[in-house]
Length: 144
Image (tube, rainbow, N blue to C red):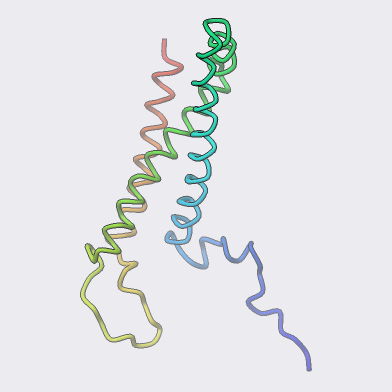
C-alpha cells in the first residue's frame, strides 16, 4: 500500500497564512509576542536591579540599552505590546460572544461564525496600530 504525502507539510504548512488566513497569522503573532514580552520582562527586571549597584552599575546598563540596537529592541517591544493587547481584547470579546454573530446550522463547508469580517478587521487593526505605535516610538527615540 502506497502512502500519500498529501497534507503533510509539517510546520511550514501549519504556519502557511495562505492556507488558513489571517486568523492563523494572528494566532502565531499572539504567541510570539507573548514570548517576546516575557523575555523583555525578564531583561527589564535584570536591568532595573542594576540600580542596586549604585550609579556605576546603572551607567553600565545605560551604555548597553541607550544604543541604536537598544532603541530598535524597544521599538519592537512597543509593537509587541500594542498587538498583544488589541488582539487579546479581540479574543476575550470573541469568547464572550461579542462580534461572533448568530448561531447557524453547521452545514458543509463548516465556515466558523466566530471568524467573520468583524474579527478579521480587528486583526488588521491590531497590526496597523502596532505599526503606528512602532513608528511613533522610532520618532521619539531617534528624533532630534
